[in-house]
Amino acid sequence: MNGTPHTLVQIPPGVQCFVGPEARRRRAIEDVVLSVFEGWDYEEIIPPLLDYADVFAGPALGPKTYSFVGRDGSLLALRPDFTSLLAKIAAGRLRDRPAPIRLYYSGEVLRYEPPKAGRQSELYQMGLEQLGGVGPAADAEVVAIAAECLDRLGLTGWVIALGHVGAFGAILAGCGLDAAVLEELRNRVESKDADGVREACARHGVPSGVAAATALLASLGGDPAVLAEAEAALSPWPAAQGAVRELRAVADALEDAGLGPNLAVDLGEVRGLDYYTGMVFRLYAPGLGFEVGGGGRYDGLLARFGRPMPAVGFMLGLDRVAALMGRQGADPGTAGPRVESLGDMPLGKALARARERRKAGGRIRFAADGGEAVRPAGETAP
Amino acid sequence: MTLTVALSKGKLIAGSEALFRRAGLPFPATGGRRLVVATDGLRFLFVKDMDVPVYVEHGVADCGIAGRDVLLETGGDLYEPVDLRFGRCRLVVARLAGAAAPPGSTVRVASKYARVAAAHFQERGITAEVIRLSGSVEIAPGLGLADCIVDVVETGRTLADNGLEAVEEVAASSARLIVNRASYHARRDEVARLIAALRAASTAPDQVAPERSARA
Image (cartoon, rainbow over all chains, first blue to last red; front, side, top):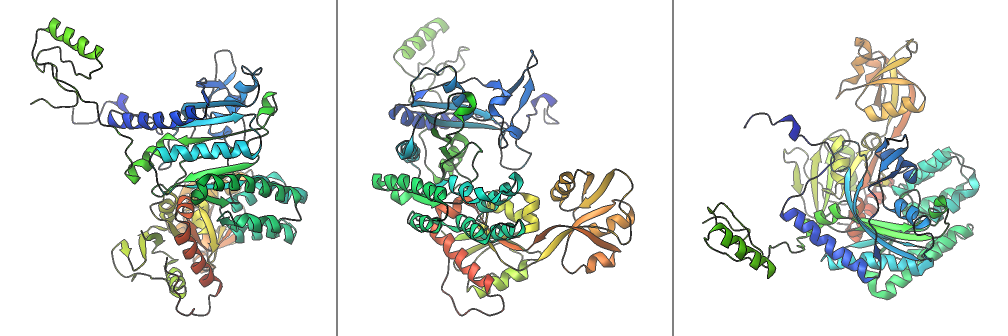
């Protein structure tokens, strides 16, 4: 027994298993978050675990998707993402429902992650989508819901970093750059590497004004007041200015609603998942090196499924939330309920008493061999 | 809470120390054996150069100093707000001086930078067999382990001493300040002060800055 374990007990990389208190903690987090979603009148949707692979096709998720050939020869995939799946359902099964459609979900997604420390392949996401949600009202609502979730979970010091993917594209639109160069620049902006942006722009013959504006996206961030500065600096690109103005409307609304202290602006948030088209945000908190969640506007995704309409959504990673709560010492409450002892009894009688106690809502541990009798759950034998 | 800075005791250590001193920031004595050193205002971690981005990406350190060469290889999700303008070198493909391109269709490449090397040849449509080594890469072509190497060069002396010549540049590198994404936002004021102090010090490399109070 002490030697090499049986080969069948090995686990594949990237999957997790939660037992007892840990599982209870995760359910408690889920309960809090889903009650917030319900409180804002979003409806639960339980989508399938697998679907046709082309639902998820795209440069960001495509390479991370576990796909396989179905019995009928079709290419299927384990869902790497809920948003695409919900967009498809809104355009298909729910096509007759008037917009906006408010939906939330909670469940696993699977993404292939190269074997590297700290990344799981199986992720548990809790999120919502407002399909058909328009303008700053829908954007601000979604961000406010995300904020309420973090608040109700007892987390502190969290920051909503707001960005907009539109300015980047608008500034570089007229430069005729190919996709690989745009991707390189997007990466440099996302890394806040303003020097790298300027260097890459020079290398690819991007005009100096455009280079300076792109570098500005990499370096402008922090207090929402920088948006006024950005708007002025981007005046040669009306579409980019429009993007900043949109972001300002959302930031102003959130500030007026009392979220100012938690708000940061980050014009370098330009990457996200490739379906984002407008406002994007990520949620950070002290104690965890990664974002706990995020979201954004994706006005082009539903058109892929034949029902063009704007949409906005966000998600929280349960694994990240649980890790963060552990680091911040915020306990969602995992103490087992009080239980009572039934003492030694003949089996039938003990079982009858146990059923009685259960009917009354008590929590018991039933030991049928008579050795332990019925004792409070969670207590060890005397 | 003080900010934590990850550094490596490798080739960037002297430049890092000079930079911190110019910025008027505390810096621990580098001769000691302690790997976690708290100074007045900052905590320092000393780790392997390839591990600096790992500590920062996971948020164990809020920021760090790493070469662009290392960042290309480790590929972490980090902010790189400042080019610190020291530790300049080039990542190159080098092979035995005077040797022709390998005759076969597969190139054998030895490198510490296995990911960078693989991507470089892949992008050019060349099949490469990448052999990951931990050091002394320069001897690989001469001994027949590989047709060429991908490695960093500063002056080219080591290449020349081992009978190699650079035939292609893969990337230029210099030291970068790297910052954890969550720290950047959730500890904005402290991180912004540190970035500003190091940026100012990096753009004035030849003069010793007067006493600064930019303690993070």
